[in-house]
Length: 134
Image (cartoon, rainbow, N blue to C red):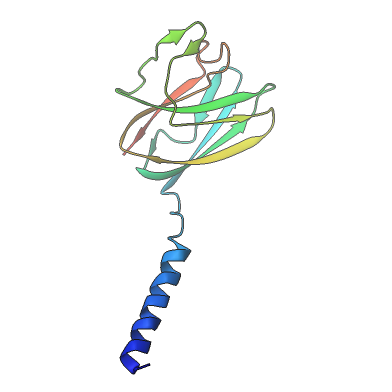
């Protein structure tokens, strides 16, 4: 093989290794911690940066709680109900038992969002909190 052919082969092999390794997962641009208990959701902040957001649910209650993230048209928008539950298309959701914590990561665009617990009677009784992504 000529030097040019060896150099080309080396470059192609290096490119293949880089491509196979992929890109590392992006570090979260922010973290939103939420404490959930019977009939309350308390987020650590009301505004988070757009991008990859790590959402942490800490269940301080005596029963299981769900944390759903829903994008809304306006800040604090009320969602329609079907019985005792909100009618919503969640961007993400997690369920945590009493005294446990769970986390998940979402990519959030700028806008208005709602954190809610959509287990029976929870949203209906006010287990929700609005936040903004900027």
